[in-house]
Length: 147
Image (cartoon, rainbow, N blue to C red; front, side):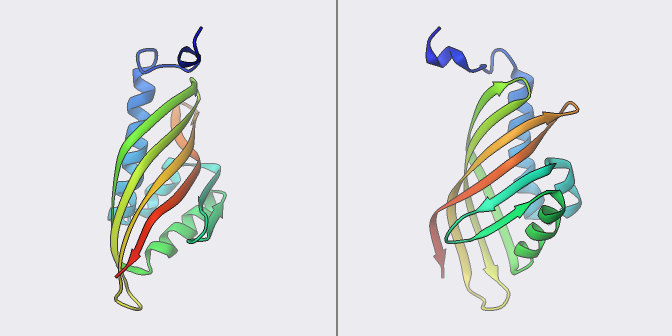
């Protein structure tokens, strides 16, 4: 067995790939629409959301995520995200690692400065009670710009 055969492929579990891709897109939709009630549907109870330096945000547990993400986004007049380049590696029928690329544009309420950022999300997703959810979501900022 080669190293490429050690992980499950889309051919073995196409439903998982579709559900995981949808989860990435759903997160972006929640942010863009500020539809905060859906956050609880896409993150696990003990999930973690992180954005290390230079952003320096971390929310551990669903309650912290439900408070922290909306509070962070509320600092902007608008914030629009686009997710692309989703790479899914199924570790098992109930766990996956995912990488996706993100571009976002917005404007801060307090200063009027525009926000343009490009980065990568590195995720661990788990299937709980038949539903895929984020277990860990880490945002790595690549190109920040405040205009």
